[in-house]
Each structure stands twice: as structure tokens, then as C-alpha cells.
Image (cartoon, rainbow, N blue to C red):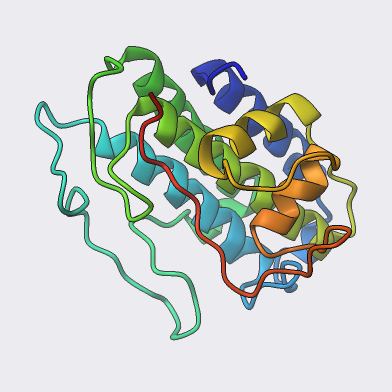
Length: 208
């Protein structure tokens, strides 16, 4: 299986942005799929994920025991904790632009960071490819949540799903559709012979 690349992240983010630009304006306050967050919070969380993965690779000597210490905050108790927020006054178009910009940061960092670099992540100290795969996972799967919330179709390319599975979920069962398998691996679907997961964890540690 070929590695996850910056181009893969770029494609995933561009596809997501293309869908969200056409999302119905009245749907942003509705629940995002099976999540307890609304669609605005979920897209903002996704932007934060992409930003987070990019900045972990930024320091000359990235910390290995904790993340780069940007301050987290919450706007309501059940909301996701975030490093940054989109300006609500800019509306959904502004939020999508924030998501696109954060994706571009990750793409740039994955492209320019030497493969030998390691940085902290809760799923395992990772390399640039691992952060690219994490960004892909978050983009593909949270777009599933958002598409459910908006009532839109979202089926990402099988090749992207296969590369994320190979990099982050090497123990996932084979033989099924890669997109369905990725949804199963992230607790969002059942697979034949495999019940829906109630807990799950990706593995971002470098592969030999």
C-alpha cells in the first residue's frame, strides 16, 4: 500500500470544502450525525484537528511527551474543546474558509517536514505521514457526520480510505468496502460479522 501523502490530504480537504460550500444555511445549527455537536461545531472541530496536526510538526525540536501548548477552551460544556474559532459574523462561508486554510497548513507541513521528524500525538508519537493520515481520517469521517446532519451525500474515494486504514488501522478486517470499513473502524457503522464498535483508537506510530 502506498503511503499517505500531502496530496491525499489536499484532495480530501478540497472534496470536503466543495460539499460544505453547498450545505443548506439553515442546517449549521443541527446535530451532526451521531455526534452531540452541531454541524458548525463539528466543522470547526475538524479545522482545529487539521491545525493541530500541522503545528505539532512546526517546532525545530517537537515535544514528544505532550502537544505544542496552544490553549484550549470551550464555548459550552458539551462542545468540543478548541484552539481556534471561526468568526460567527463571517457566516458559513467564513467557517469553510477557516477549514480550507487549516487544511492547507497541514498540507504544507507534511510536504516540507523531513520524514525523520517525530512529534507527539495521543494515538502515538508520529511522523509527518502519520499526521497526514490522522488529518485524512478526521476529514473523511467528520464529513460523514456533517453529511448526515445536512442530508447530503458523501462517499470519498476508496483509495484514500484504503491508505488511511493501512496507516492507522492495520488490524481492521479486509475484504469489505474500504469506506464502510473506515466507518466501522471509527465506530460509525457495522461490518458483516463485526458489530459496531463502542470504543476505537487509531495507531499513528511510524511504520517501518
